Image (cartoon, rainbow, N blue to C red; front, side):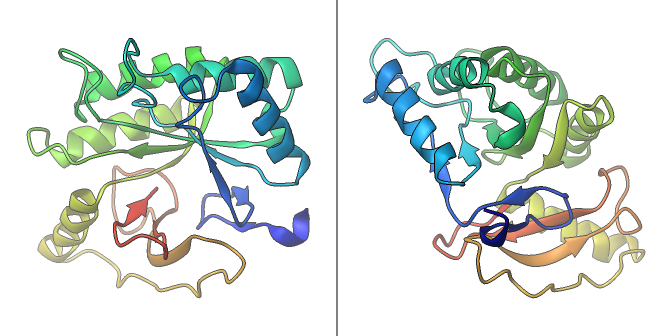
Length: 221
């Protein structure tokens, strides 16, 4: 299994070459079927599971978070928490006053995720969408607080946030030139630029922005 994994930027996380999207869990895949899929995924040596808040709000009668609830039950039953990397995202509309990247909402959404997943930490926490009504510094302050509290290991951001971050570098004239690490050929994620704690405060420790080669939309942590 180790030979199939690579580092996710500077986060210290080790991930396999494929991620399992959890949007079907609790939707088109019932609980027993979801458990079978998760068991087979873990048995294969793969470890990255993606389950944003909004999965599967679009289904009739669903409110969002159904996928997390299924995964949380599986984690408790299987005892596999230490063996998997859980990636989740916040920001998409979940209901009245339940969307965006304001600090208060991010902190609330993170607690909801931890409860549903039956865990005390999230490996990779990402902004699922841009929020033009919330200052970038406020969003980053919330992310940094979650990291400081030990509730999040690595962070992510949307396309707009990446652009604003680099614009901030230019304006402050204190930014280091982003480094361009060599992409990991074994992994579906490659690095496009590296941001370190010397480059940007208050963002958390060593942070890379990453892009998926199978999608034109950049994702980052």
